[in-house]
Length: 359
Image 1 (cartoon, rainbow, N blue to C red):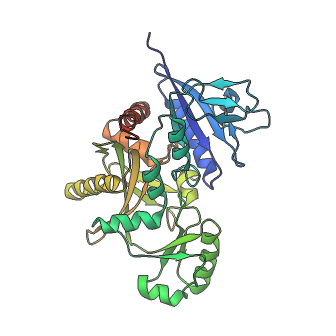
Image 2 (cartoon, rainbow, N blue to C red):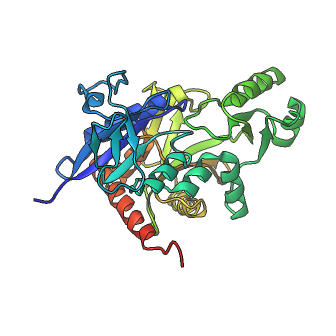
Image 3 (tube, rainbow, N blue to C red):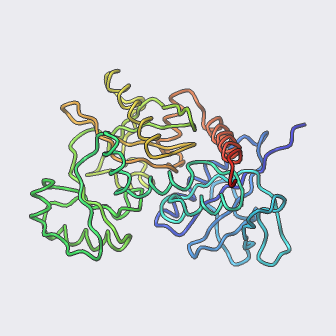
């Protein structure tokens, strides 16, 4: 009988998207093929401590709970036998692949990916560069723009700079417009701004999450999304559409309110537009040096223009998330998707290890 691979599902983290990560991890753990894989839960609490023990998975419908009696875990770089050890040294285990389900900073931005790369552990998803670029909306949009891909008009503000008045921004981008932290996701810290007072409030809130913020024109159009899967030869799912029931697709609408938005999969758009969205999704994935997986989000204007909004290198895996739903509609089940992502992680690891590191 073939030995099961041990998959470290890494979740939690210190970002504002901590709860989303817990939901995603729970869904992956419930759906993974247990004939092929053994689960090793690795949770990061809000203080940044790593934990690994099966009590994190206690119960069938509850989220992991971090307690003082959870085993505190450490990662050992370069140790091919025991990858994870306890802080007391009386507990150790090996993982064959890590599946990071960390959304936002300190998880999706290349930091954890760099740690795993140094430790010599295969991991699901993009590497250091693709993860970092995908998280930073400023750098991401500049790279897409320079590659000739369509993006909305935007401005970037740094904390150290004198902030422009509302009227100046409105003259350049029109009003309303959106204010966003540059390095965050899941609609956290995002504000739709129509007045000077709202602009002041939005700046304070966005700068509480990041040193750099993005101000982006408001796009009146449909929200279309595509899922990408692969390394050198990525595949793209059918497009889907988000139909928000609120002013915009907020954090609450995405993860907490099951009636916050309707998901139309496949999107009800003409075939030529669907093919264009799929082509742009693949181009964006490659332009931003991504691998493994990503979800690419678009706006489809009434006049037919298609704009790339952003890329998510660790998209949500909750039961109402678009990424797994898009692949299900394309013919890849949730369980098959997880298995394929693990295969891609091992494939990328082997390719990286085949490179020379010196003379």
